[in-house]
Amino acid sequence: MRLIVKIGTSVIAPGGRIDAQRMRLLVDQLDLANHEYILVTSGAVAGGMSSLGLSERPTDLALMQASAAVGQSQLMHTYEQLFFGKKVVAQLLVSNDDFSSTTRYLNFSNTLRKLLDLKVLPIINENDSISVRELEGSFGDNDELSALVATAVKADWLILLTDVDGFYRQNGHVAPEIVPTVRQITPAMEAECGGNGKLGRGGMLSKLKAARVAMEAGIHVAIANGTAPHVIPMVVKHKAGTYFPAMRTKARAAKV
Image (cartoon, rainbow, N blue to C red; front, side):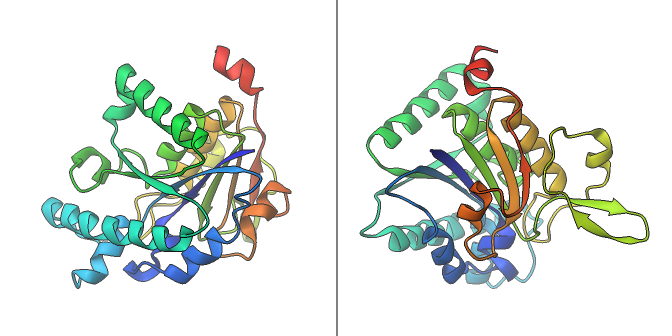
């Protein structure tokens, strides 16, 4: 299978500091011998904050871009250490323009497929250090980006890892309960979603939008807690998170 695993800021850099132990636990869950993976990783800005002595996400654009530049270097260095001896990894930094231009999109898709053919594991992030639109939240903390990547490579699964167990249904005065399966994303569901995270730009709403894009492209989607033990293999077995089944076959989606 081909799986896209999106790791949110709340998972990878809680408190504004890259957590190498959490990253190790996730990397150790990847069945590299039997499946293909692409990681879409957030956390560059949050990771750079600790090195620069910042306690809150910057609002000044130049300082935010500086944080992203510092944090991205730390992020890839950590990934390279964790995959050493297991898998060759490649870094791809993308922007909104890579998806709005047909030529750039085709080049990006071809590069991804060639890396997978070469048994290389791509690690993708937004180019936050130079792109204004991405820092303003064009991709919603990489949620939409991960769905576009999944579509580009015709993935089997898109797994969105965050700091909650899945999508929760509001029950008035009763405590919200997790929804195990969502076959259709409705306006009422979107209205129930809260705001963005403290350190990242995403939120449940951006994850639902990403899920819809992937579902319509024939890709199975899950939203799950990235800090839970063995979460990635559990998601594939439908034993963790909220499952969003593909709405059509990949062949039909490609034709559309």
